[in-house]
Image (cartoon, rainbow, N blue to C red; front, top):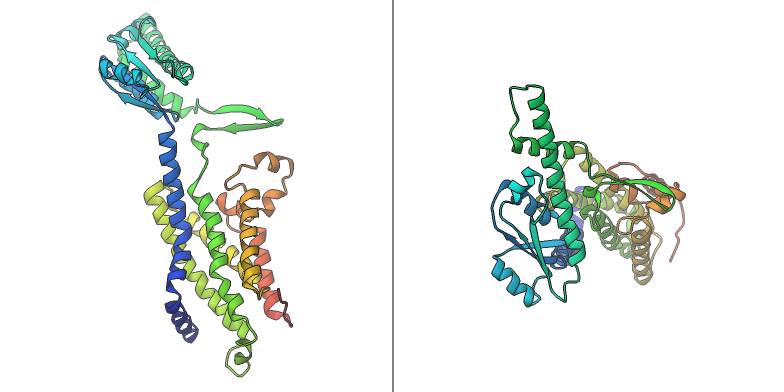
Length: 377
């Protein structure tokens, strides 16, 4: 094994640029895509001018709610600056939170809390206004509930009266604990539940899984290139057979790729706050075994680099379309449940370990090692 490793190092020194490129390709391209998409998403948010005539806890909470809304980019300005930018069409609309906002909410008044302005190019004014109204109504409902709790305490002679702000904060905690943002809906005659925090388009591990499949195909082209009539006869008089030589090299590549998979895990944890756990490490390991075993057997059937590369790209494209990593296929899985068992990425994306493709890959390696004869492509 030591001699084989040293031989592989000699080959890597001659092709270290391409080797390093494909080792780093999945992680770096995933990072670039996620960051670029986040930038584009931030640029496509609707700019809204926010004028704060008072700085109270309730007003700050209202602004934070607007800031956390995915499609809104609030900008705090003075009234004069906001209206000036609105005239120049630099803002879609302007909302002015008037003085005594918190005081009026506590008293149960909903009149003249916020003033809004729009221009002839304010295409998103109506949905923005409804969003602001919903947040104001939320504050009003919390204040009303706090008032009822205080009145009940007074009626029953409770000596310890909860402050108004503590009741408001407690109501927010209850909303989070009870998952009040969970929505039930029916689509295509299928009952589904979606939480706001689960909605996303490009998830780091989904993108990485597809790119890692492509990189594995590109890295394992050495099997095809070294399985040539000019090379294989040299092993007849050696201490090790050609198939054993190839298998040991495959183990070396598996170890190298798994090291870079772990580095990717730390990279995603640092930039995307993806969790690090033993279950994730185990899932990465079995996913790597599945990729390498299947790609290894696949590469043994080819002699033409053109056919190998075109077939590899075709497989990656097909998996990208049917795996659900980028395009949701929940509706298809609901009708044809067996698809989830044939999905090569499904087990890894679900945090699992062993799937049918890992078993198929291992069985095919044993078959390849024991069979006689060659197949050309």
